Length: 320
Image (cartoon, rainbow, N blue to C red):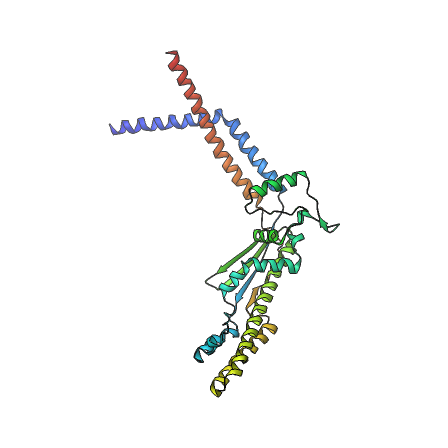
């Protein structure tokens, strides 16, 4: 009994597979046409896509000597807090990550290196060194973007991008990642020009170093002024000695911030000019398009066959 059931089941499976094959054979023209058409369209689109290059640098936060003021302050029984001085955090990864992702640092990079023509190269007339005037289509698209503005660049009436526009554009090509195990931070930029991609990463590093040094100097000078005022007020030799030590530490911080290249961080892996494109991955795009189109066309063939059979059954019921 079981043997006969197994034989019947096998015959039914063979019939089902044969029917499926017949459906695919009937719609083979549709399947092949759709699959190769989609693959060809994606291939053409990928060919016209601009090559993007990626340059990356790796930095390592460094605990600067200025952070030693915290231990001095604790040894001096909270004298630094009483004087109202700030305690610099040094080159912590949290601070550096926050700065790299901040708009203020990106704005400084854009202003310092005049990057708006670089970020909006399609709208910049390099020969005449001026912004191109928007055409009717650009004006229409601008109005549409103003209605549904979300992660889009809005331009002024004269087609000149603002600093805010530049920050949004920079966000689109800049990548900041932290390796918590190694304690390193990677800065990468994706751009059509490989040399410019490397430069943009270097611009970020230079501006980060300048910003952190200037901020450390500003805080140290402010602390020094406050400590000197406290020194004038007190006549206790012990407290005076402690204040002199704190003032000396501020002077040391100012000096180190001015002359030490690795004041807050050091560059482990400097940015290099990439010799290979990062994207688009044309082969992968075409492969994914071919596979997706093939499965979709097969599904479409079975769906059309189902509709055809449903109509035939409906006609048969009416005839009866």
